[in-house]
Image 1 (cartoon, rainbow, N blue to C red):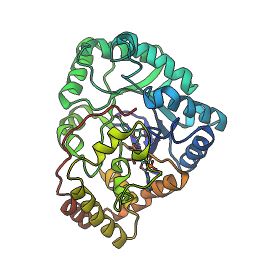
Image 2 (cartoon, rainbow, N blue to C red):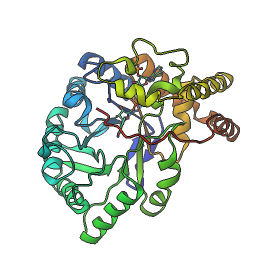
Image 3 (cartoon, protein in one colour):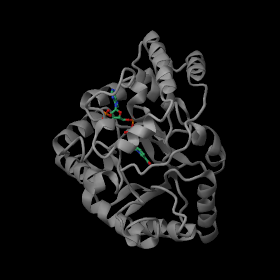
Length: 332
Ligand SMILES: NC(=O)c1ccc[n+]([C@@H]2O[C@H](COP(=O)([O-])OP(=O)(O)OC[C@H]3O[C@@H](n4cnc5c(N)ncnc54)[C@H](OP(=O)(O)O)[C@@H]3O)[C@@H](O)[C@H]2O)c1
């Protein structure tokens, strides 16, 4: 495993980390979660990602029970939560002080830990002044309940405002952002955020390196029965991954699979190594519903030397760097 600083902070995260969206609490229960977490931990993963909204809190419960059953030393791993969607009532959602505090306490209980290493604002909240949210995060840090706070899918302008507010009021600024980053979605990480990396030393914990699995090639000949897009309640994800005209997307993946075969790595490993190769990516959060997938994906670290300038050029030629149209979604 390779370890990299989370932005300009001193915290070194494993370049590949592991998250539980869709899987824990839905496809994976505690017994299999233990196997997945062990598999990652034994291979050097030290960051496990979660959110209050994942499986409506069940994902954090499953992860908390798995971590406790495995008896991993608390000072050897980091765990996160994210706040935004905690329920349907106005007090249960958004980034106002009440929900930020209550969501943190609920996550601590579900994850069975005394503090969160990383705590993210899962989306921007236009109804709450940035100062209120920055202050709420700062207070949690002062209380020892959170170590580092960050954002997820905020615009460069919104993150800059958070820094400015923190500077003005001598509060703790965000350390990291959690954006989507994969071969179909590159705009924020490779464009919008560049001044933030340069000026603030922002770290990134990027999500969906396989674009929900498409980049493995598993959808090249149709939709496999046990894949995430077949899950009840995830029909919206299916239409996001396969929008109208998505055959063009599949054709690109097919060409990508041919390249992967030529350089003797799996498409999943090539897609993950390509993300990890970007120095502004602090950690690539992997997702896996099965241990065999996770083993394959974690071996992407060994594929890093295969990301040569020639291979990068050939990948560029396949994907032509045209990002998907931005469609936001609630990653519950
Ligand atoms: N901040 C945010 O808004 C946000 C949003 C989304 C995710 N995240 C975080 O990022 C993490 C990773 O995102 P993601 O799960 O979308 O990552 P991903 O790597 O794009 O997709 C993972 C899924 O692809 C399939 N897969 C993975 N490896 C495979 C392999 N080798 N062969 C075949 N299929 C494979 C599995 O789904 P099936 O087996 O079910 O097909 C797996 O669950 C999440 O767990 C979460 O922690 C954050």
